[in-house]
Image (cartoon, rainbow, N blue to C red; front, side, top):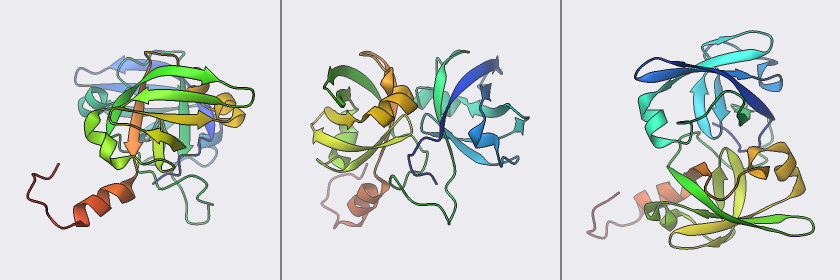
Length: 201
């Protein structure tokens, strides 16, 4: 489990094609301070498992299923990625409950800069829109954000200077793909509501 509070920007060091998977190597510092084999680290919102590491690089195996359903497909050496270690029981939950299980891939539609923040509009798969509400939570590329305005096929978020400077969202441009994870609480609430007769998702 994660909080959606990015700890550092890592850099993709190498990608090894394994046919139905890739081996992803990432340069990092903070997330390796207490790393162990088998630890979980969120990479742009995708929960990956540490398979090897040294003082400045760690690797993870990314299966075809993950490549098919996330924006990790197409990453290249030199790309910056958002990194967060799994939360521990003694850590403040500064964002919201994040599983690291991507629900869909969105596309940046536009950016509207202001003096102290920036509003970003993102398209999302329409089947995810029912989980979004104004002032609710969503994870974009592993970053816990508050929805400003929720629409049927898009939503907006406001990015403060800290988020712009410390995450990849500061550089995302219209057309860029981003990983989305909706609020797990919304999905549980939907599941617990009385069955309406409509097929469940």
